[in-house]
Length: 91
Image (cartoon, rainbow, N blue to C red; front, side, top):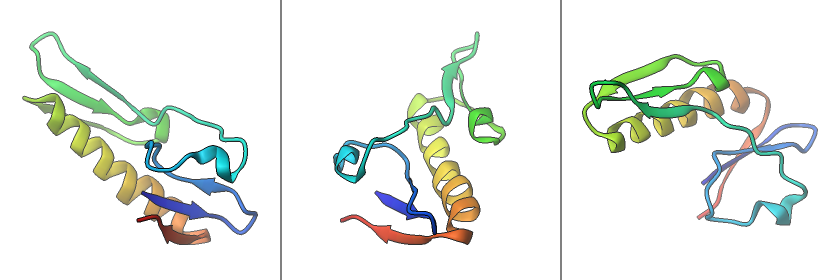
């Protein structure tokens, strides 16, 4: 889990249950995407809530979830927020 800390002390990350975010303060959790099936049973990851594209369609939900995570980690977190913050990797 990567934690991006901006100069004002705000922390951004992709939510997981790897650490209890309440230990860092009161979290504000926002949806980053919607992963849904279309009428043909194919899966898409709509990243509009994070200002991104719609990825897919994929034959499997797991593929859409993997693409969603990759985009959010490499574009939304690292490209957008890492420019003005520092990265701390929780292991």
